[in-house]
Image 1 (cartoon, rainbow, N blue to C red):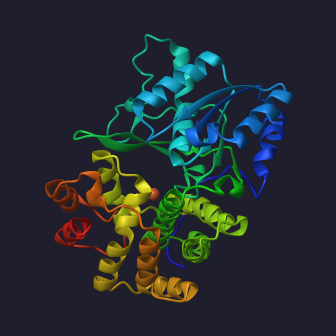
Image 2 (tube, rainbow, N blue to C red; image 1 turned 180 degrees about the vertical axis):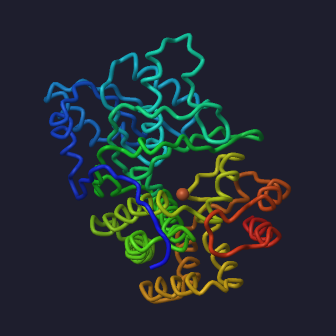
Length: 384
Ligand SMILES: [Fe+2]
C-alpha cells in the first residue's frame, strides 16, 4: 500500500426498519428535555411525525418544530437559529432530505452564537461560509441528531452543510467543521416508503454519483474503497430493481439508505469529482434540484472520462463496478437515468452562455481523469 491517509470521526448509527421509534429513548438517555425539530414539510405533515411528537410529549420532552422547504438558505438558517436559541433548545434533531439535515446542522452550529446578543453582526451563517464569509466556523455547536428520510446526500455522515442563494449572483457554499458531523444518526428505511419516484431516483443518483466519485478519487484509500465499492454494487442494483419493477420494499429502501450513508462517509474522506464540481455552480443559478443535476451529468461525464482515461487504477475500479452490476458502468448509468425519467437541465432555464461559462471554469477536484473544458461545455449543451 502506498501513501498515508486519515479518517474522519463518525457519530453512532442506529439502522433498520422502525428505528425512528428509538429517538425518544435516545433523547432521554442523553438527558435532553427541549428539542428543536428541523424537518422537511413532507415529514412534518406526516402520520409518523404526529406519532413521534406524541411519544416525545409522553416522555415530557418539549419540542419546537421548524419545517423547511427548498434549499437551505442564509435567511432560513439565521431565522431558525435565532428561534432555537430563544427557545433554549438543548438538542437539534434534523429529519428529512439533505435540505432539512443541512439546515439542522447549520442551525446547531449557529444557534449558540445568538447568546452574544441580538446586536452582534456575527450571527449570520453567511459570514462563516467557505468562499463567501470572512470568519472561521464556530467549533462548538448544540448536540445534533440526523434522521435522513430520502436516501441521497449522505449529509448524516458529513461535516458540512451546503447553504444556497439562488440567482445570477447566487452561490452554493459549505459551512464546514470537523465538529459538525452529527452525534447520532438514525436511519429508518421505512420513512422513504411511498416517496415519489422522481425524488427517490434523483436522491439515489446523487448518492451513486458521490460513491463513484469518491471511489475513483485520487484521495481514495483502502478503507473507503471497501465501503464504497460494496455500496456502489448495492445502490446500482437496488435502484434498477426499484425503477424497472416498480418495487417499493423495505429491503430495497434499506439498500438505498445504506448506500447514501456510505456515500457521505466516502465523500467526506475521499472527495468528489467533475459532476459535483459542475453541480455546485449550476445549482446556484437556477432552482434545479441537486439530485436532478447529478442525474443529468452522471452518464455523459463518466462516458467522457472512460473515453480518455489512461489511469490503470481508475479503469480497474470501473471494471470492478461493472462486475458487480453485470454490465458496463456507462451502460448501467444510462439505463438508470432513462428509467428515472427526470427533467433535462434545459427545462430549468439555463442559457447556453451560462452553461458555457460554468463548463469552462470546471475543475475535476479529485478526479483521476482530466477532461478538456470544451468537452465539458459540449456535455452541458447536450443536456437540453
Ligand atoms: Fe451530491
